[in-house]
Image (cartoon, rainbow, N blue to C red; front, side, top):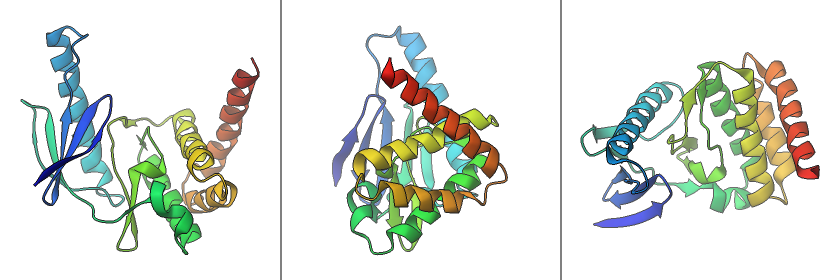
Amino acid sequence: MKNIISQGAEAILIKENSLIIKNRIKKSYRIPQLDEKLRKQRTRKEIRILEKASLLIPVPKIISFSEKSNIIKMEYINGKKLSDHLDRLKNAIKISEMIGKNIAKLHDNNIIHGDLTTSNMIYSKNKVYFIDFGLSFESSKIEDKAVDLHLIKEALEAKHFKHADKLFKSILQGYKTSKNYKETLSRLKKVELRGRYKQQY
């Protein structure tokens, strides 16, 4: 049985039995050859990063992929999407710390998720799975790691505003395991200042 579970600007996600099928959408406003090239590049990159991340943290397993059709088939993670459930879970603080540890492992291996929100995290069997690596990339820059942390902080303030401060503190507690913790936190403050400066003008 198939059903569309999400449709974004980049891709359609379809659930089929115990699989998730990710299909990158053709963009009619792009030259067809360029569109095909970009979709292939992004599919390859997502697969490469997912495979690398799978050795570090819980992520969906890749079952198969097709470069011809730009389709990736992954395992479906049966659990609670944290954007819907984090506020109501009794162990939300512990889960937030697990999120921080996951981010630290990715960053220490130069993986930037690029879309760190609780919508892209599933709690299942006492693990936090990170999903949707469509915007991810590899970088050793502290700036990119700080921006990644800024994204999850903004996501908490938008979706979990009542508990955002304590949840983010717990994420940072978990993130302390990163070898670049102090440097990244220092850069995060500068990233936040830039954001506030832009809002004023």
